[in-house]
Image (cartoon, rainbow over all chains, first blue to last red; front, top):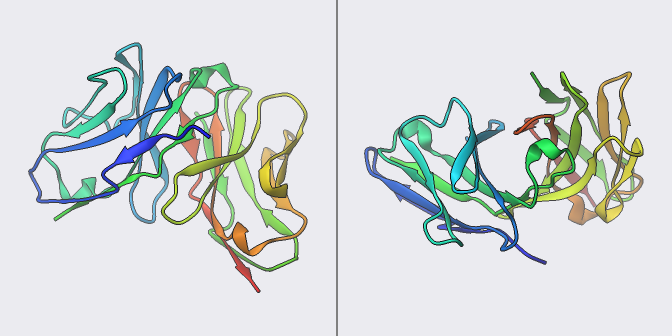
Length: 117
Length: 111
């Protein structure tokens, strides 16, 4: 069964450092997403991406965050200067259809745990 | 605005007994509703989805959920719990271009 693959599974970084989280979506999917889950809290939507541009983003996704699909297979989330409160599990997801279609199903990766010290 | 409330943060059942995980939602539109399961160190796996077809939805591993518009509920059930069902379960609502997750319910299955 096709999977969404995320690397690294766990990253520890110092506050103020840049972090890049990588995702390989399912090959025929067109829509890509990042979500995060701070320990003990809800899974929160960060951003959706289609046709090489951001289609939706939440209030969380400020100027410190960026996404990119550099080579047609990887989908990356960059945090420019990490803060303590960025510590969370970050989930990548992909889908064939847009969420607005109603029949959309997102396939999630296993997550990347980011710890900011 | 859409939101979802999972009424129990933790549910504990004995193996072989029924499972009920409760979910209520609010939505301005006709929502799509999902249940996802997360096993330790695994991604979020889709259990089942409701998208305005039959109100009783059957999913994988013997789970099912019933969409009740009058009660704005989408509770997840299984007749007989198995040890492998122990995991975190998320109810999700989607009515526009993002999905809103509930806080999750941790299911523990005792032998």
